[in-house]
Image (cartoon, rainbow, N blue to C red; front, side, top):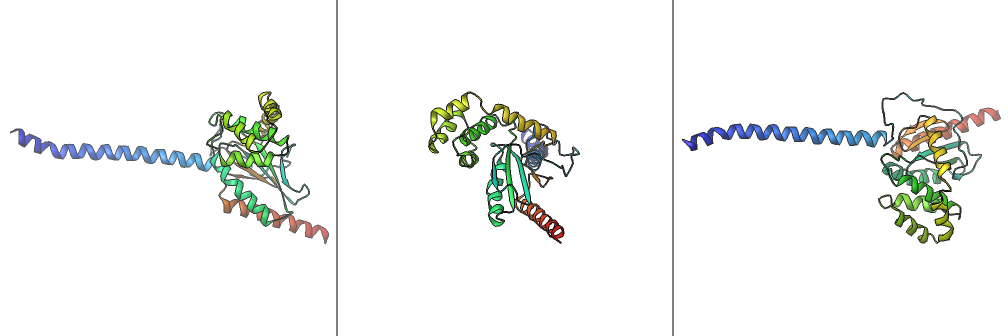
Amino acid sequence: MNLEKQIKLVPTLIIVLLFTQVALSSGIIWKINEINQTGIYGLGEQNNPQQNVPEYIEGISIDDDPILGIKDAPVTVIEFADYQCPFCAEAVSNVKAIMSNNPGKILYVYRDFPLEATHPYAFKAAETANCAGDQGKYWEMHDLLFANQAQLDSDNLKKYANQLQLNLSQFNDCLNNGKYTDEIRHDIDEAKSYQVNATPTFFINGRRLVGPLPEQLQEAIELAIKEAEGGLSENMN
């Protein structure tokens, strides 16, 4: 009799197991979708992909932030980024390649937008890059931080300063005294005034591009170059 009951229970157990598997699979798929949405739209503190933001903003300030290229280039690319953002790290080599392929045509500006709510080391990393800039090593530190964004604790930040052969006393004073805290806060405030809510956010001659794939970034910059050069040709005629 017990054997018969056990046999009858088998289909029920199979059904229960199937429902459990479906529920778990649904949960995993939901979580993956959530992660993918975060990846597409960035990790902004006010992450809201449905928020209406202007696609173009005139007069985006370059402030006094670090630049690559020449100031009278026809295209200005301003990036608001975060040192713990993996998509920002991917953009580093993309920007360099695009600039290399378009010499003299792009002014690139890096502005800090550390997402403090989700990236606890990003703000101090931004300070580190600026402090390295005092000794002429901003871009070297910028690249080093992005290449090691999983190791941005205070001990590693000092290790990177030593690796770049900075004057450690000067560097530590700069970092410990918060020399660039207000400057970074200013970048954050201006980013928010432009309704930046995700990283990386690019403004290419004022046109907004959020978290682009490499080919999207390249196409947007090349289009801006063509438009700028076309405009110059018309003015010359």
